[in-house]
Length: 97
Picture 1 (cartoon, helix red, strand yellow):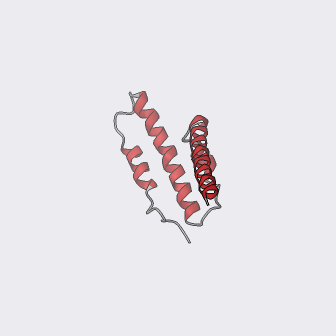
Picture 2: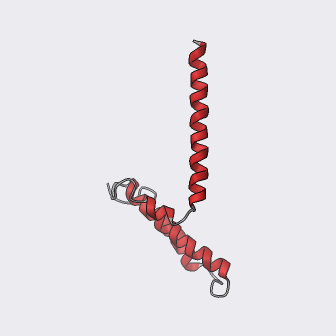
Picture 3: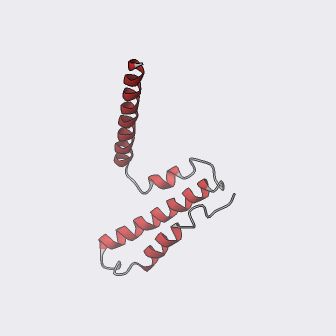
């Protein structure tokens, strides 16, 4: 399989960044523009992986350029808490039987 699994959505993000105005004198917009380029690159890698053009996990380093370690940790904790909740409910249901 090759490309296009997400209809090349990363192109829209990259085009938005390309067209973003008033960045020359606005550090907030310039920083956001640079972030969008990183996001578009990560989206591109995700599309390649999910289309079978790259191996699963090849996208991780590029995605990590877009998000902080704290955000990854927060999400990991939330996911773990959800798994614990499901296991707790499952165990409680099994004990009722």
